[in-house]
Image 1 (cartoon, chains in turn cyan, red):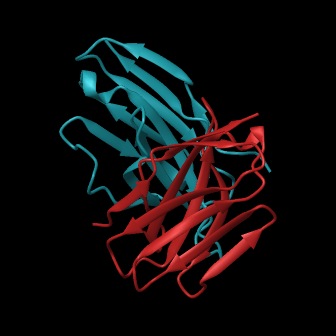
Image 2: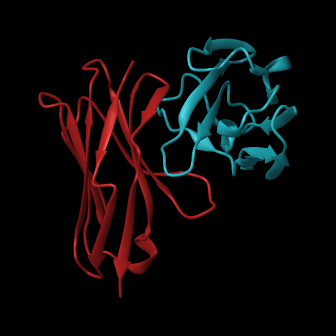
Length: 115
Length: 110
């Protein structure tokens, strides 16, 4: 089966600019996650979707970050305006809801550099 | 929320020796404990996981143990090989929400 797809793979922007990331989960996976992974740290959950509804966005900096998952498939994560501390890899992951396994399948990530 | 601590942050082992990574978690309601391996520039990949109703699980050279009373779990890699060099992350979850440790960089010396 095809894996989780993300684009772009790399992005360099200046602070105060806007940026958007795209994720296409594995077909049929109802649950989708966005993580932020700062260099040298573990992934930190930003937002979790169940189909097109938000399950958990408690760690999403809502003053600058937004995410949506229209039609319950693809998702976009936006940062506006970006800050230097937003430099990180943004990982998307998906899980088939209701499956006997909680395994999350990760995409290759988008490496964001804010200068 | 859940807090996961992971030790050590770096680990260097001689090829063929064993490697052990330890994690502790704070929320006794956590019921799923996966371990992910992340090679440089690549996506995290699940290598083994364990549920709270199991004390130990093994898959070839990799094993995980869980002590619910002490709220800690460990990854054991035996007969290490150069391809085991990577960053390893533990995680704990209640249902689908994962909280990750900070990672352990494992280097296997030839």
